[in-house]
Image (cartoon, rainbow, N blue to C red; front, side, top):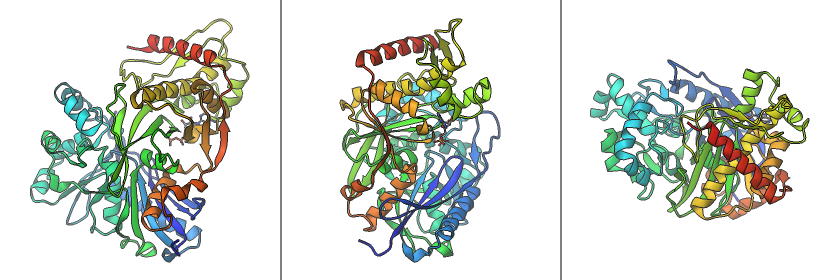
Length: 494
Ligand code: ADP
């Protein structure tokens, strides 16, 4: 084992930058966090200032070392995990961004992508594993090239660089020595051929993106270089990179084919490890690269629920029937069942497996006896119903029946939700002991590349559960509930 005892994860999220120190048992030693500005120039547009992202990430890295009273020589490696798909463009010579980062949530290129769907949906689907959508990086890069003055000229002069947030951070950490990304992030750009593992010529042509402006694609776990830009971190190897959802899959130790995790946040993200296969989904799940270790690429199926924990925020902020998210559990438990009320929170359409932009929020089964507790219960149950449908779609695509679901995210403190989830799925739901599974995944990737840990097998002893929920409901009852949920979805659809 390496003499250096700690691994530092940089977790660059959509609303905050975090730095977390882990010890060799995968236990959290210290955390620092800074929020940064969300810029909304117009409805549907979301931007971040790349310099503020870098400054906030740098500050948290320095802060976490200080708070744990450790120096750089005690840190074996740095792993990076990041909000995915968000694009930064900057000048190769000066390192100065040519504008704000366009964030994954930004919808400015939605009409363009809708048009492309008519002509290139199949190409995009088979090459990248993605739906042709504005979420992914390609159309954002195209937008920058078409709309930011000087971008094309800089590109022609070979001075323009593009990158997702991982690329931007590594570039800055190494003072411009490295312009790289990893396979998991590259697979979210909609420019990367996930089968041949290279920037795809047809897609580069379609989006008119110069290859010279794109980063080199490295493995998710290898020593890429070392930090030079921050004196307090100088010399630490940068040795792991993965997009946030893939990092969470790794942090949950979903290393075997079929292993799956769900993150219950504002929305929900389910990923299933599909091993060395990149299955084509028949249920409009995304096929994505989970990570690459050496020459071995591991793939995943991914699905998302748009409104997960957000439905609880809606109960609090719009309906006002609770004053904090934590209150929902007690209110939901004040009735013994949902009273026939089903709540489909299709506020922004429906995600996997429906992909119905026109669906809208619907509550069915209201009677004179319905009270706020039933509504709260139905809202909470909707998170589990949506997840159950997603996982069913995944099982149909991959042919793998899950033996357990590993979970993380803010809403997993709700025991009623997780028990109901286990009941609906008919399998145990396992809550990881560490809530920091995303950062832990990045730390694992970096530690594996630097000898802190020998192999993924040696990590197994780290994973402990803070809770486990076994299914207790009869299958017939669960199936009846799911059938009634589907009827409610039918009413919510466009
Ligand atoms: P994100 O990373 O997407 O910002 P988090 O993982 O921090 O989200 O989780 C926040 C979400 O969890 C919110 O949507 C909130 O409504 C939900 N949440 C928080 N506490 C509870 C609870 N006790 N029961 C159900 N949902 C909750």
